[in-house]
Image 1 (cartoon, rainbow, N blue to C red):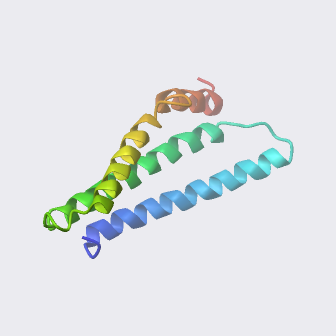
Image 2 (image 1 turned 30 degrees about the vertical axis):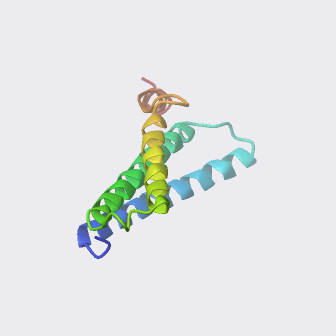
Length: 118
């Protein structure tokens, strides 16, 4: 699976999104340190951060699923079970992240009002 071009592309796309998020965060921090008030960028950071988190968790679950099918009962150690459990918790936490701290839909409305004046 790791050598699959589609998997590699998805991973690269997530890395690009993560880099863009990092640069946006650095711009917001620089703006705040110069005395500006938070703008719609803070809502954007929340939305993109949770979306990237979900993409990573989905990829992680798919990777575990793809590799678990080739394991024998002896291979399925308690360590692997624990890793799977942590992955499932991360996946579910990523889903909840779009709700807490203001749902992503609410954050989109904040951006629309700030940018478009709607």
